[in-house]
Length: 139
Image 1: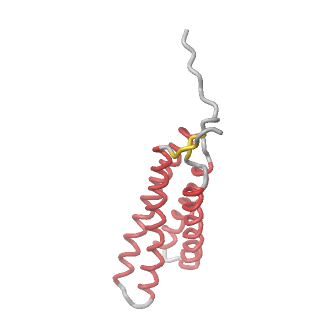
Image 2 (image 1 turned 45 degrees about the vertical axis):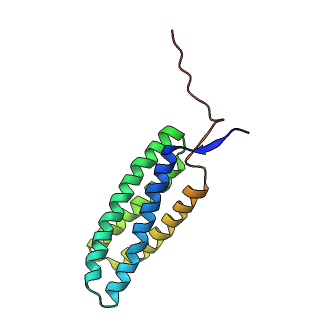
């Protein structure tokens, strides 16, 4: 049976997804603190939104590298779904559209936690020695 090992690209994906999930889990905490009367928490929620969004876009770049180097497309597709939802949610929050911002936030956190689990347990980041390699022909 061929060896399967986590590549540096895979470790990078794991690190970015882990940072992303930590950042996104803080968002409902800051929102809840704001709703209980801690008005400074709204500022932290806004800063957190910028951090979550930035990490999400970084995750897109890493997922593209995983797709190219490891020939695994699912981390890119899942990341694009999460980041698209986060972007919509970001602008819904800026516009005060809480009817969209809150339920989309719940779904986004859940989706990112599932992606985190899949990246740590799944095979979207390992090099399978059975995978076909491109051969270089010299003239």
